[in-house]
Each structure stands twice: as structure tokens, then as C-alpha cells.
Image (cartoon, rainbow, N blue to C red; front, side, top):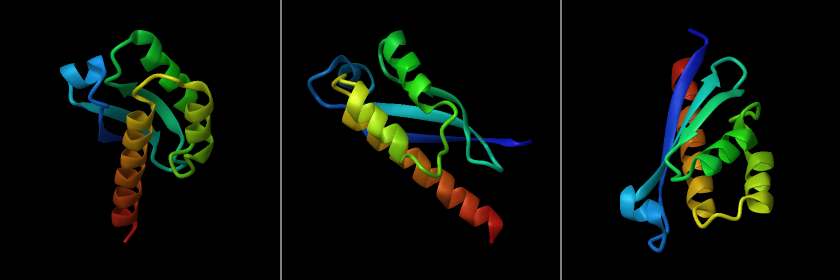
Length: 105
């Protein structure tokens, strides 16, 4: 199998619906194991539009270098969950880097 799945989590802000329903934002990434390219994305944002917009920003990017994607979230995503979404993405990146490093040793 040439792909791997990683996930990341972060707390939603307390004043939004996502916090009432889930407490944490979860992001799941399907990644090409060899290249680090993000193939597919899903997350626990409440609206379909927000989930699709997050996927649009992330699909095709590389999990090893998230700064361009983070910049896009900061410049184009103005939902209240932006900080939690970025934190969950960084958590998923850490999971990926930890597992890839473990598997090459």
C-alpha cells in the first residue's frame, strides 16, 4: 500500500457550535507514503462548506511543509475554528513525521 492515514486533534474554541458537539476538531489526512503529498482530507468542522474549503487548501500540498497551507488558512479562512484547525493539522504532521521516522530506523 502506497498511502497512509494520519489524524490530528485540537480543542475547538468554547464559543462555537463545534465545541458543543465535538469539543475537539479532528482532521484526517490520506498521504502518499513516499512523497508526503496529501491525497484526501476530512475534518470535523460543522459545515460542508468549511470541510470542503479545508480540503481545497490541503489536497496536493505536502505534509512535510505545511507553512504554505497554514498561510492560506490565515489569509483566507476566517471561521472561528481557524486556530484549532491549524493546530490539528500540525498535530497530524507530527504524527506523520514521528511514524515515518520510526519506520525508517
